[in-house]
Image (cartoon, rainbow, N blue to C red):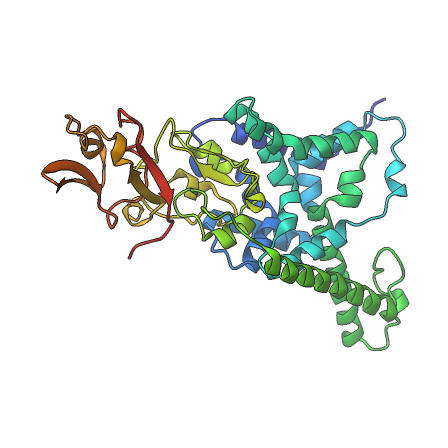
Length: 408
């Protein structure tokens, strides 16, 4: 007789199905990759790096409150990556190998929060929801190198879960570690509260704090270890801040992106903006000269442009790396500036061509007289770098150069 399936497992499998549907190339608007907005780890890290969040991202804050009262609630009911990992683990005969591994998930979570406090939320790249969403890159980008690199993280986790059953979920996952820390915090506060409420209560009769006894010495030791790990993260992020360098030419980022020095840390490479872009100009970066920006979204205007009537990328970013904006604000948000190579320009060589002038939605290109010869001129104060003029140019002499600033 088969054992009944726990309700938590059924709910988590339903969550997996929903997350798969929301990761497909469908016109889902702000619901695309919705589970990213539920991650307590991404929510905490975004708050620590002072990233303004889209309103729906506060779902992560709600989940954070829930896990303070319900042990590993997110793992048991929501996480789609956990559902896949557990399913693979259950296919193995020897399922206790994970017990031999050191439990470092709490230390990863605390170390990551420590680095986030100094603007380096690097542990967010290991968030299981972000890894799950980025694994859908081949569906949206095709069989490209960037797409396969984007989905490599999830494949490695699934492979580990098959080789060493339950290793990821029970020993390594930083989101699971955050939930363990939340449980320990709640139990520690409970012990303190019961002590102050009734000083005569012996601590040994209080609710135990795993994995050892609930003595005050254990509580203090647990607190010191956690502070030490957070402090290590703070020190590491300070050193990274001293060493970080960026490419000389800043890459073109989606409209509304934060400044480059904070964008590369705020972005968790989930691929949500890539999926949401209707003109398919957003793709993961593979520029090895900019290692800090590896797999971060960049713009390529070779086959499309940034539609003036679109703000999709800003609506689906779960971490605030791309700030939300309305369509009325878009004419004031600059991606870059159009640059025209006049040596190959048909008009500048005396030919008949007005392609760039006719298509510019912001009237940012005008005709200037130079030596009695007309030639196109970019009005820098009006140009936002949308790229509409790039493809209509018959000689392909127009490019967009970086210069992401916001005009008042």
